[in-house]
Amino acid sequence: MRISRLPLALSRLALIVCTVAFLTTSPISCWTQEDNETGAAQKSAAAGKSGSDEKAGDKSAAEKSTLPPLPADAHVDQTMELNGKTLHYTVNVGALPVRDSDGKTVGQVVLTAYTMTGNDRPVTFAVNGGPGAASVFLNFGAIGPKHLQGIGNEGDSPSDPTVLKDNAGTWLDFTDLVFIDPIGTGFSRSSVSEDQAKKLFYSTEPDIDYLSRIIYDWLVKNDRLESRKYLVGESYGGFRGPRITYYLQSQLGVALNGVVLVSPYLNPSIDVNADLSPVPWMMTLPSIAAARLERENKLTPEAMAGVIGYTLGEYASTLIKGHSDADAEKKMIDQVTQMTGLDPTFVKFSGGRLETGAYLREVHREEGKLSSVYDSNVTSFDPFPFSPQQRANDPILASIIAPVTMAMVDFVTRTVGWKVDARYNALSYDVNRLWSRGDDLRQGSVPQLRQAVAADPKLRMLIVHGWNDLSCPFMGSLLTVNQIPVMGDPARVAVKEYPGGHMFYTRESSRLDLRKDVMEMYGKH
Image 1 (tube, one colour):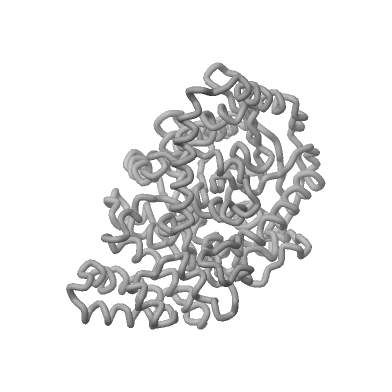
Image 2: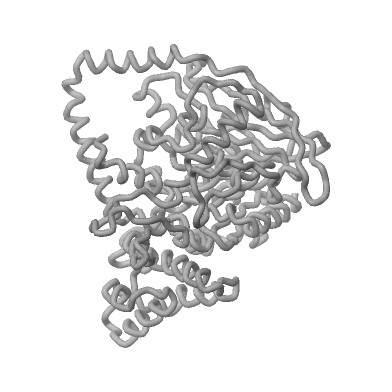
């Protein structure tokens, strides 16, 4: 990869599969075109593939086989204070093998488990997204017993000391927690060549198959098949969630009790045909309006109810009518200007249709700053302010990788004592580069969600979002769930929103509210 292309590559990792509306922006379109050209070139070259290429693949596999083995499981007993009580728990770090159809070990998945003694304790499995993200974000950011201070919010510095504190928002008091790092993330690794890894791990269906099997294997190994079982997935992990649930239910014979989808990449096809459909613009407007309300200290559920009502009603109908009703169109542009606080000329020439990439550069342009697609109220200075397109990395991505990596590596190797000789990948650009983005990915996971809920009248799914998130906007899930038929209790599939962005849980108040809502869902079983 050329150095001049690096910022775009970093942008791609952030956006290619965790975003909905942003899939239509220029950098992503450019990437899709480049991928198609690359794919054509690869097909053309395949017929004349040289022996040296095959030897290179063999060498890659040989190099993997000579890596130092992963250590045996390690554990440590810890305590934390929560609501005036002391929790005693055990942390276990170890790996489970992934085997191919012939029984050969082709990879190892590293898991971090937090368990407590007690009768009838549920177990919750957690996976992040990317593809290429380790589970450290849910672990140290959201639900684990320790919370990493100073990540994901305005003014946070990646060079600040990493500080882990007891997490008042942890779920550990009401469920054991098992954090899964998919192959190529964290310390998890493939033991086969890149070509084989792409087939076995780095595409939609194989990814779901082996991760589901890891959950099954952990339950068997730890005698937990009879426990109540839950799954939480974030971003692309939210894409994985319904598919893993349905695969476990229908193929492996393991029925989950509930699923929590955090800022999920749930329904990619919802953004189709932005030249005609109002839906892509209905997804971005509420999150942009929420960010403006927050900057003015006016963000409340009541204020957002008004934003959502306008978006579903007058805004959508005006977009559908287009220039056939000039008065309504002008009124809509004035209303969008008022709701967002953006420059009237910018909104006018956008036709009231706010494209994410353009907005992120516009909203803080006078300060010389860029906004994050994950939370547009988190900014960084734009090192290329006169470039026609954003060339710098996302402000949150640029600042979060160093602290989460340092904190997790220190925790695993020093605190737990799992002495591993390997690099830790909080975000793996190699996994993202190798990932197959075929039609199955674009189909999303809503069909599996519907089927899993239909098959089990007691299964519950809670979909949670931050209002400011433009990578996986909350309106996408709201519109999607509104079209799912009611199957028994209407609250079995629910959407809830909180102040903040994609990682809204980095804000303590939102993290505590999430904990309360999840406890309520678990309490129904």
